[in-house]
Amino acid sequence: MSAEPRPTATPAQTREAMDLFIATAHLGQQEMAQRLGLNITDLLSFACVLKAGEDLLTAGDLAEHAHVTTGAVTGILNRLERGGYVTRVPDPTDRRRVRVAALPDAVAKVVALYQPYYDRLDAVFAGYSADEIAVLHDWFSRSTNLALAYIEELRAKDADGE
Image 1 (cartoon, rainbow, N blue to C red):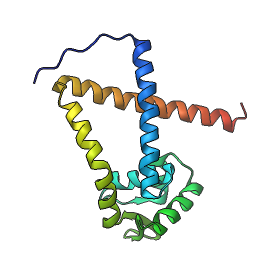
Image 2: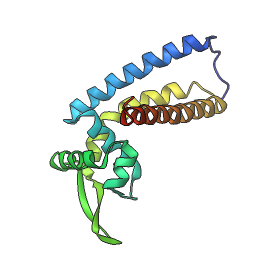
Image 3: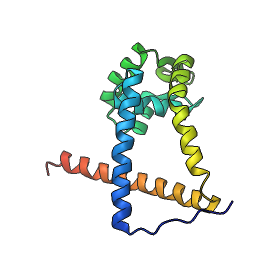
Image 4: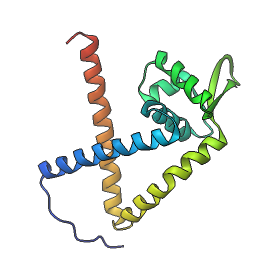
C-alpha cells in the first residue's frame, strides 16, 4: 500500500497536535472508566491484567506495570475484585502469593466498549503504509519510555523534597 500525501508540520505544530491528542485520549479514558464503573487508575490496572493474558501478574508485578506503589495495589485489587473485574488465584509456585486473573464477563464488557473505537483506529491506520506504521509504533514506544522516565524523575524529585 502506498501512503497518502501528508501535510508538512513543524516540531512545534506536532507537539501541539500531540498535546491535543493526549488531552482528548485522557478524556476518552475517563469516559470509558466511568462507563465501566471504574476510576482511571483501576482501568489502567485492569488493562495491565488484560495485557498479561495467561501470564498472570502478582500484586507486585501489577504495581510495577501500572506505575503505582505496592500499597496502592491492595486498594486497586480490592475495588477490581468487588467490581467483578478480577479474581485472585493462588500462585502455583509460591503458596504465600496470589496472582490476578481477569474474569471473562469483565473482559467481554471491556471489549464491547473498546472494540468500536479500535475498529475506527484500524481504519485510520489503514491509510498508512507499513513503513509509516513502523514509524508510528517506534514513536509511540519511544515517547512512552520518555514519558515514563520523566514521571520517575519528577517522583524522585518529590521524594528528595525538591
